[in-house]
Length: 153
Image (tube, rainbow, N blue to C red; front, side, top):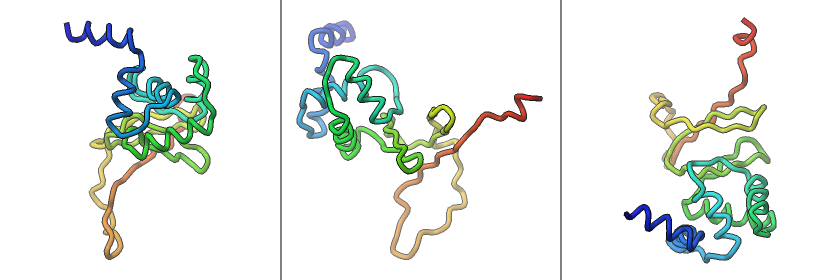
């Protein structure tokens, strides 16, 4: 019954969950932020998107938004813990809706990012940080490519 009522509520107010999410982190729910949040968080599963991809998706849904506004909102979402920014290489940035600590495989040929569970990566021998410093976090990006030698065999 709860799921049925929730589905009915979302049909009546398609931005209700986005509105609640933005208010929860203290962001003013502008029309553009609501549309971006709905596209990012309410349409199923964890995602890795670029600002350009998100801009195209939101524009296709009929909401007019500038690319600069998309970048600003993505950085605000990141600062408020809703997203994780992944700098794959200079000028190539993805935003990840999965903010639980984890790592990534990245295939440059396709631009595909795939999550790697944090427990699957072993950091048993890290160097100690410099004096007066502590390790805040670790993020590993494993750059992958098709194994053409195996494919040919």
